[in-house]
Length: 114
Length: 109
Image 1 (cartoon, each protein chain N blue to C red):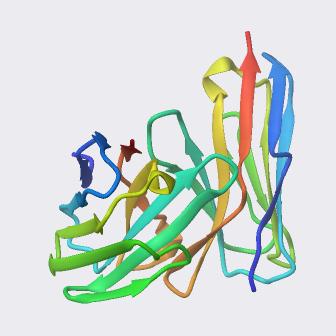
Image 2: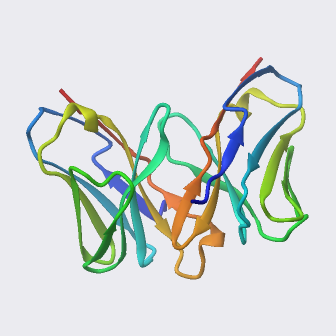
């Protein structure tokens, strides 16, 4: 059992349409994260959550919103998708007993905005 | 601003050769993590080094944490094609990960 799953794995959408990506965890961890990964930029934090209804912005949050209504689910929404949001999106969870034990990442969602 | 400088960014070598990847910072960290990422997948934790001067071995991979806890290295002995991937160093700070830029490693048979 992976402990964290992302859906969908692949999505193609048109410019201007809303898109929601889902991250689901079975570990009951407080901290959840959304990253995007682009060539030449590495992994960049979009938003993170430290509990139900508790979220905060990362370094590249413009154009994205998040919601966490349950511990296990963290949703990332692109309100109006743009071509610059074409990327691979990763969700991650951090153990409550310490980040030293490592974060666990989902398998990613490859999003293409055409 | 805490930064992790990782080098080299790209390395292509023949099977059987040895290599070292470096992760340096001007900041002191309580620990450093190394991840490996394969195409189409998320990063996977390889190891966390916690104590200054610590050395950890994972089969042919040797990880070292500097005495001052500002730098770390990953050494691979007798690299194999299965070692191909993106290697990332990271530090957990204030409930977020600070990332190095990554080293793309290609091992040619």
